[in-house]
Each structure stands twice: as C-alpha cells, then as structure tokens.
Image (cartoon, rainbow, N blue to C red; front, side, top):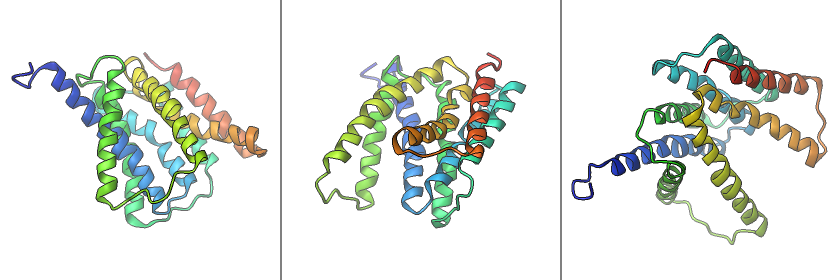
Length: 233
C-alpha cells in the first residue's frame, strides 16, 4: 500500500481532506469572510439556518428523500430561525452575499457526501478534517496578507482554548459521529438550535429579556427538532 500509494489508507486520508475543505474551509471560512465584509451576525445566522434544508436537498439527490415529518420540521425550524433574526439587512457587497450563501451549501454537501466516502475510522475522521483544513486556512490567510501584528490578549486566548476544546474536540467530533449514525436532516438540525441557545445564554449571562416573538420562534425550533427526531429512520 505504501509503495503503490493507492491503498485504503490514502483514499480515506484524501476523503478526509476533501470533506474538511468543504466543511471547514468553504463552510466556516465562507461565513468568516462574509462577516468580515460587513454581513451582520443576524443575517449570517439566518443563512446558516438554511443548512438543514440544503442537506435535505443533497440527501434527496443521493436517494435519501425526507419524509413528511422531516419536511415539516425543516420548514418550521427555518421559520423559527428567521423569526429570531428578523430585521437583519444584507450588506457587504456581492462577494459577501455569495460567500454567505455558498458556505452553508458547501457544509451540507460535504456532510451528505461524507456518508458515501471511505472516511477514516473513528475519531480519525474529524482529526483529518480539522488538521488538513487548518493548514489550508493558514495558507489562505498568509496568501491574503493577514498577519498577527499584536500580542493576543489573555481573554482572547482563553476564548480560543475554549473553542479548541469544546467547539472542535468535543462538538465537531460529535458531529462527525452523528453523520455516520443519523440522517443528514437530523444531524444538521443543530443549525436551528444554535441561535436559540445563544438567546438563552444572553438571558442567563447578559440579563437580556425575551419577547413574545422570541418565545414563539424558540417554540417553533423545539417542535422542528422533535419532528426531525421522529422522522423516518
């Protein structure tokens, strides 16, 4: 296998690199580019909320059609995210608009396609994806002329460590596991839950209050996730 460079290990590594590019470079990177160009966080969250819809479309293209309960959950969840982010304005120009639309589509396609690729075993899947995507993102950053000119403040470093541990090692690894053991629409339904969790954290830590529309939106998201969980297996 090592001499011919065509063994299963190389194919699995290649699949991890390709899906890492789709998920993290085009997906996460696209959102970062869009927000740096002026797209408001609310609009970005709304567009990212379309990711389960994209996953359902790509899943159907691969022969895994969503059931009625799943379709109802997808539409209801996206409506809930839209209510949570009502009033956002798109700004930043054509490049930003393109990036913020392509990003969730790329993430959804990579998620669905990865189920049909010879991915590395176990936790090697997210490890390969994150390591290869990190190298690609670093190369793109240097190519765009980005440099770390100042010393990183302790608070920012603490946030970085938190994201490495809980955002990458825990959350992304859990997502990779879900992609292998759950339907794409259910695995990607976290895109509906994230805005609701952010709102609740704002209530707990920032003293924010919830209006009737927010409560309605969060109720819609909760029902949507329940419908997705009860959909056909």
